[in-house]
Amino acid sequence: MTTLPDFRLETHFSRWEFKARHHMTASDAETMTMSALLALAGPEDREAWDRLSLGYTETWGAPALRETIASTYDTLSAADILTFAGAGEGIYCAMLALLAPGDHAIVTVPNYQSMETLPLAIAGNVTGVALRPENRWQLDLDEVRAALRPETKLIAVNFPNNPTGAIADKAIFHGLVDLCAERGIHLFSDEVYRGLEVHEEKRLPQAADLFDKGVSVNVTSKAYGLPGLRIGWIASRDRALLARMEKMKHYLSIANAGPSEVLANIALKARETIFARNRALCAENMAKLDVFFAQYPYLYEWTEPDGGCVAFARYLGKDGVEEHCRRLVEEKGVLLLPSSLFVSDLLPVPMDRFRVGVGRRNIDAGLEAWRAFLA
Image (cartoon, rainbow, N blue to C red; front, side, top):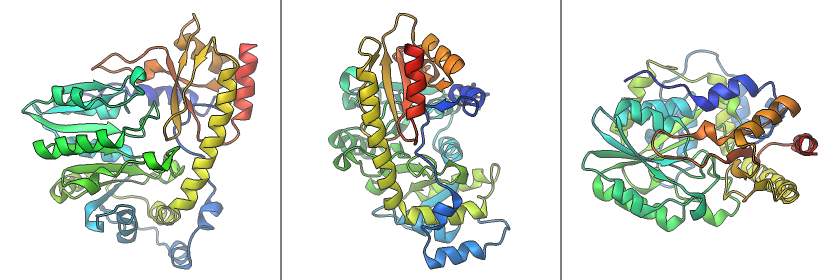
């Protein structure tokens, strides 16, 4: 595999995420304190926390954690779950296990950067399928079909999407599953925002539940709002694939942090409570952003996302979105992400957009600073 390119978004965050006074582009839900999470634990899990030994853990993940993760799916068992130190490690191992030089992959654009750069580095042959604003950022199944080749081994999607917040229509998603099943193609489905849909009826099924080559990635970071745990997982009925990935993990994190596994188990069991809190917060913030953007129709176009913690608003100013975002963070400490951080080597991405987050508490101070900048 060739040297990987700079991870634009993470490099930008390394400069600004902990310096900006108003993090208005966060991709995760509001987090919670250790005491708040432990308050959600049942007696058995609280005892597991109190008796925790700080030794090594199993590479696959703690059996109790894998059982709980499996319970979040309709058809899976613990044997169908492999845990990782965050979703990023899982994506890395999955792409290495699924692709080889000369293979072909199809990915949606825009998407999380590693979903594109890793297939490009490993296989070399990648086709992008555009999610377009004029089509509500919806996936066009005809474009996916047109992109297929005999050597296509993987299709990678992300719904609710980062950065747009779009969710594929259910009929389209099931059509994609059928297409992959017919061709023997793995469907790699990034589902890290599942549970934060604005309307529950739009919630998609999990790919790993639908067919043997469905591969679902999830994590405690985004919808759960617990990125500090660094617990992610891959779910799939393809156990040979999981076994290959487990061997790769030996070269990376080897094992997860024991305390994080116990805490993640608590969070997963309390997921409905956590998701309900985070959905309410997203709804509250979207209402505030509705009011804010309505005050500046000559500068912004804004559509609420279908789900998740982010949306991809449009900037109409003559100075351009890059300059607008730069001045906002440098002059007022308001951090937004311009669309240049989501550019693709495969397809053009609208260059007048910026990502805004909807999942954190206390956005009022950020909106006040933003208004002051525009005054």
